[in-house]
Length: 576
View: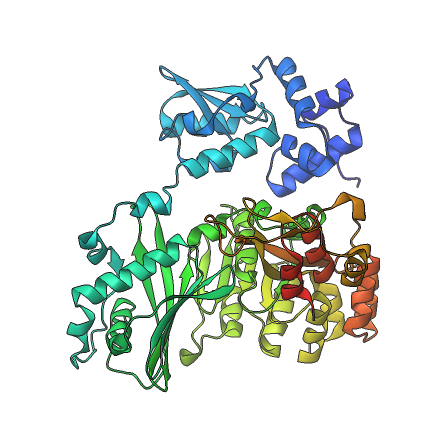
C-alpha cells in the first residue's frame, strides 16, 4: 500500500505558484517545519536560503496584511508589560503598538493564527497581525527582551553600607553546627559588608570564579575573568578565619569542621526577577581553608546558539543533530571550556511541552524550568549510571548525562541512544577524534560507537578582543603567518586583518568577554569505517579534515582572521 502523497499547505502552494520557491523546496521546508515544530517561513529562510524580504512582500499582497519595516523602530520604545515575554519567544512575535483595546503584533508568518489567539487570551486584547521580515524580527525581538532585563549596574548602582549589609542571601548554618566562637565573628558587620562587596564586584566584572586564599603571612582574593586569574584584594591575614567562617555560614557548611573539604551553595537575589547562584567549595590547606566560589548565572544558559561563536556550518550541524529523534551528541574539552553552556543551549532549544527531558549532573549548576534535573550523589549510590537507568524507566525523549566517566555509564548511554532516545553528554578529551578513541579504550564495542555517536563538539573559550581599543597588527611577517597555519584556513591573505590587544577603560588588558572556538565533527561513513577497522585518532582526524570539518587550530585561526581574537590568544588555547 503506497503512502499518501504529501500536499502543500496554502502558503507553500501560493509561493510555488508565484515562482518564489520550487515545489521540492516547499515540500522539504514543510516537512522540516513539522518535524522541528517551527513555521514554514522560518524553515524556508533559515534552511533553504529564501529571501525574507521576498516572502514578506509576497505574503503582504497575498493575505492583504500590512508590511512594516522594523528598521524604523527603536525596540526600547515598544509597549512593555502587555504580553508575557515567554509567549513572545514561543511564537516569535513582537508587540508593535496598542490602540484602545487592539494590540498589533509583528509576525513573519501570516498563517500563524495560533499566536494571535493565544496572545489574545493572555492579554484580553483583540490582536491584529502586521507582517514583518523574519531576520529583522529576530534581531528586534532579542533587543526588546534584553531591554526588559535590569542590568547589574542598575541593580546595584546606589548601594550604601546599610544595603551591602542586608543583601537578600538565601543561606544559613546547618542545624547541627556547633558554636565555637566563629559564628559571631562571621556575623560582624565589617566582615559581612566586605564579603558582600566582593561578591557584587565579581558579578559586575563578569568573573566566573572567586578564590579566597590564606597563606602564612598574607591573604589574597582573586577573580577569574575571561579565563584568567587576577588579584583583586589583599585583606589582613588575621581575617582569614573570619572570612572563611562567613562564607561557610552563607553557604550552609559546617563551620566547626575544618579538616575535610565541604560543598555548599549561595543564592544572591539581585532583583525580584534575577538571582545569581554561587557554588562553593572549601579545601583545608596548610594555613587555613581556601574557599572557591563558582558564579552560576542562569542567563548564560539562555544566550542562544548565535551568541556562542559557532560558524554557520558548525551551527547547522549542531542543530541538525539536535533535531534527530535518536543518537548521541558528545561535547568535549577541558574544565572551563564552556561545555555546560553548549549543552544547556541545546537543551533550551529542545525544551518544549511535547518533550520529556531529564539530566544527571554533578552538580546541577543552573536550574532550567521544564527540565528534570538530578544531582548525582555517589555517597548514597546515585551515580550517573544509576540515574540513567532510572531515566529510561520514566519515558524520556531526551537524556543529558553530565559526564561519561566509566564503561557502565557509557554502555547505558549507548543503549539509550540506540533505543530511540537523544542522548547528550561530555567527556574530558582534547579533540573530537580523541573522544571516539576514548570510548573505544573504555571498552565500548567499535560497532556501537560507529553506529550511535552522531556528532562530536570539541571546544575552547578564547578571550574576545575589545572592539573599542584593538589595533591592526602590521608587524607580523608573511613567513610567520604561514608557519602559524594561515595558508590553510580557507580565507585569502588579502581578505583578513589580524588585530593586537591594547587595553582601555572598557576592557581588561585589551580583552572583553569570551568566544567559543569549536571543532564540530559529524560521524560520516568514512569515519565509521575507520572506527570499525580499529583506526586511531590520527586516522580519524585526517578523515574529518578531508570531509571539510575544521579542527580547533583552524577554527581559532579563522576567528583571528575575522578580528575576534588575537593570534596570542589563538596560540594560548589551541597550540600544543
